[in-house]
Length: 389
Image (cartoon, rainbow, N blue to C red; front, side, top):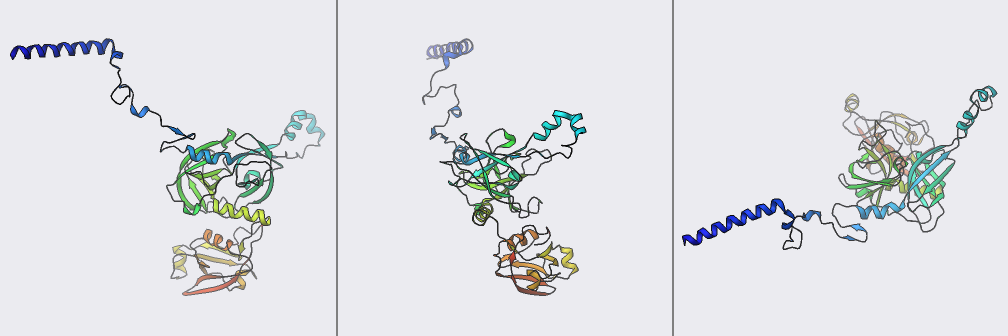
């Protein structure tokens, strides 16, 4: 028995020594396939996922959403005629500056932006500030086709514009449900930042209902941290399935680049504006003619009001809808129709949604009395004074 154990131990010692020598001098001899058919020197995580239909099956990939949405997102080049110099006919100016002055006067101003094809008829959504004042607008599709676009209509107060192009077999994006969006949902921003070409960035919805930013008259933005840069304006904000949720509009930035705070107009708002522009050539909104101010705790205490939320009316347009309906300065609006009101942005939006020439019940707090007043809504003027709602 002792002799057997001695032979076994010597054999093990020799085997270990041989293994050590081979591992040191010829490690490739040990690279054999394991039982699963995977080389022992290869990590299982390095195996690539199988591709189906050109889209990755990886749970972390949004390739399918991008593939579905990007064909409908276009690049927009808006050209403006150069401003005429007041010295254009001054012979002394021409003498000193000559050809250089004439060349500068002849160079057009060019702006870059993005747009989204929403109809097989050729209708596109973009921002008003992308095409405002343009003399010529050219659209380039993701497939390389180009076309001149005409302006169907524009709404500066919401910063939405509608263009139309005449091309066949247009890719169209699918409208999503912006009302179902929640903070934390994954979104993709698609556009043409800095003119480098179509680009897709990803992020999440950071906040909803952003307003009082001073960007537009009507503000109800979706905030996202998906990178949005100059040139993305008018592009698409889509969900993880590639459905349109909003039109990228603005960024908060101290450098001109993305800092992770971008804003998009909800598709529900953009679609409503688009339909009005196509049907009527303008957006019809309600208006009552008041000067509002947010109700603060200090104001509520000063006026000895029993409420803490609402909008204080500081002025009423004489013979305007609100005046005729009985609203007075000092009243606090708490509800428009069935919509509760807590700030001026909500008041503006709720009134704008009312149909002109129809009566609406507006609830106000006047001192210690709660009143319901019937106001016949008028149509919002094209260029009202900013503070009048």
